[in-house]
Length: 178
Image (cartoon, rainbow, N blue to C red; front, side, top):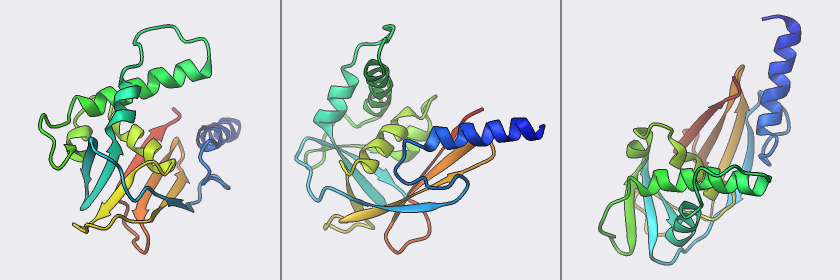
């Protein structure tokens, strides 16, 4: 790869992650503390992920999932509605039929098996916006906040979500520019 192409790749990577509040320098893990919800009313969706339960409001996921499919978008809002719709349908395709204590269940491992892994990106959206609840290691008391870190890679970037005081992420997503 020529130096000019490397520079263009770096610019594309930084631009791709610039929407995240955590990015101040491409290529460096930059922590951001996110305040989370401490209660989410039933019905909800409980995502089991590496000893952590991520709880999402089912009404909001259902709202995203109801977005029209296969339309030609003309605005950025319409484009994001289509994207969020696909992400929500990915989660809904894997949730349990029977709620447990008002929460329908899905595992992160099951979402990893979907062709696109779109559902994981909707979880990222809820976590980043502080619209999710996280219960760690079987605790009944929700975490008040988590740490989000981003890191630019040569051809993309990673987003890490971890509990405060932990070094291992409970959710790590990679996306590629090229």
